[in-house]
Length: 409
Image (tube, rainbow, N blue to C red):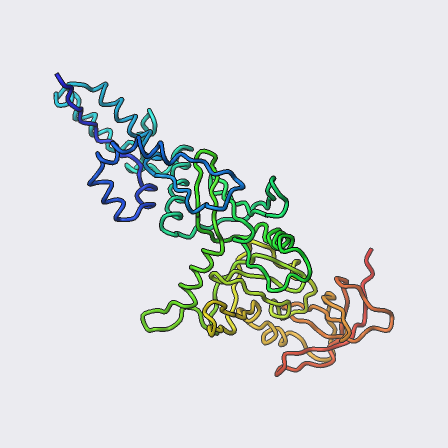
């Protein structure tokens, strides 16, 4: 006689990561055609197991890994073995069966064992569950264009040739590689250098930066996926700079304060990712004080608050934005100047020395401009005493003279 299929105990399987990573249409199709999906699973696994080497990124959009092979193979094998062991006792009511069903409603089956969950939903994940959810994230990004975020943790050059650089991001156990031409926007002028060398230097300066990306191809067997940062930036620009709200207003406009991510720091300023657009902020717009090197105060991966000064949308393909860090906060001079009075002496630290004189940083975040002392120019960072000679509250300026220079021990 043919064996009847056993009814499985009510077991709450943790599918939160799988459900969130599929579209409503895919969920509906999985419910209505579950049997068809399992029957076609064998043929799909034969045709879609093609590997993509780490350095082959020419046709990365063609590399599609079917979710059925990755996610349902283990689960179907467990269900099949469970049905074989239950046999003809599927509908027989035995003593204590109802109690077993009630106990199983608060447990989750992971592999061949059950884990008792506190609230009926398992929060803690095993390594296998984490790997499955990571793969779901990558597949959803590849299929729907979902933007993922990660930190550039390495820059590699291909073994086949030293003329192509790759940014490395880790998403769980998966290694995400982004070619340099898909990670940074090439400058208009390479200044006589090779383009691949310029892109490599730009990519190296973005080590540690938090960036967005969209997956283009996945190779689950090797744990490698290819992605594009520029595609993610274009999607964000379209949403935030060209998209409007219900009243028809742009989401990003002048005088708006917004959060930005520092992606690169040089001596003269910083580059920030402002919702899909890299904006350069010069040193003079970083602080009301006189700074010499922006790298002393900022680093890649840092999130800061900026104020949008202007937005130029005349060319939709080349949106230009100017921003300021210091104008996003309160001007310290308006409050700090009340602490000081003309004719009195105060201590401070030399913050900068240039042709205009010596700038001394006083308490409260303001600088006092002093003339060169007769005994010699003090080095930057030295402790000095200044006598206030004048204060202009309208222009937020204070000037004085250095009366004493502390000699370092």
